[in-house]
Amino acid sequence: MTVAIVRSTTAGLAAAALLGLGLSAPAAAQDAAAPAAQTQAAAKPRIVIIGTGGTIAGAGASSVNTGDYDSAKVAVDKIIAAVPEIKQVADVKGEQIFQIGSESFNDERLLKLAKRVSELAKQPDVDAVMITHGTDTIEETAYFLNLTLKTEKPVVVIGAMRPGTALSADGPLNLYNAAVVAASPEAKGKGVLVVMNDEIHSARDVTKSNALKVETFESLYGPLGVVVESKPYFYRLPARPHTTATEFDIDGIDSLPKVDVFYAHVSMDPKALGALAGLGGKALIYAGTGNGSVADYMEAPLTEVRKSALVVRATRTGSGMVVRNGEERDDEQDWVTAADQSPQKARLLTSLALTKTSDPKVLQEMFWKY
Ligand code: SIN
Image (cartoon, rainbow, N blue to C red; front, side, top):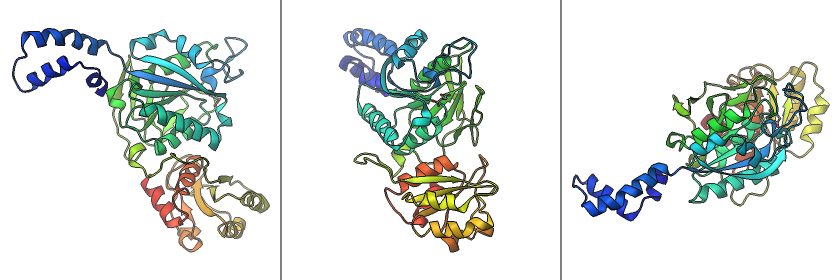
């Protein structure tokens, strides 16, 4: 990996260059290169682990409390210290940025975290960044970073479904596996990754699918790979643009355009939609039933919302693509559809898009692209 080259001595590089030309290095250069080669072999990637809270930092009253516990209690340095095996794969350093349950993330905190990760990724003495995070909104943070960070360095977000005090706590192995992935050359340039339960997920596709199970994380099209016995095995590549290939940049941005989500259900109150739209959002994600369908009695209220904000139809089903037009007449209504993105990820993409444009056609293209 690049790290090894950065850490090479001049003598080592000279010897390597000679060998590359098919010439044998002079004995003195070989001697000088030998200790350098040993240093290279021993040099471990340097990873900063940012702590934000969540269940991975949680503590219960008893070892059998797997669902009844307080999250965001244990400092990131203590979480790292509990997994000494991590030192075999990387030189790690902890940094506490928040100590919160991930349900309390908001745009300000997302921006603060993204800016810190971005700063760290620019440092030559940092090879990768990991973030410990609550699982409830891990997919949103990871997706936001995936769209905004300008780095090829591995960025891995992890959490746990059981607090460290519980029998069969999953946090320690998740942390170790995440370090294995973050330290691997294969993780470079693959966008932001979420490593949970021995699986490597792309931030774009991953979602929490169950409130309690350890195997809660699923990706729309399957994980990118797995971690087995301290080795990452990648089987797929993210097909959609991320990190360095997106047009989004948080440098110089101090707040994000307000975008809200309205959840559809049987017997909605149109006044609730009007009240939400009245809060000044620049766009509204309508998490409709099935194909993002709009109830007959919600069509006029949604047409009204479009007069002051963009309207994006998503589906509340958890997967599948929202098909444009048909019954919903999106072209006529000037509505956008969220393609296969969940309402919560559609909110993030829309908010970032609004930093660039308020044209619904351009936003629609972004949904097809990202
Ligand atoms: C949270 O998201 O902060 C709590 C739940 C969890 O981390 O699993």
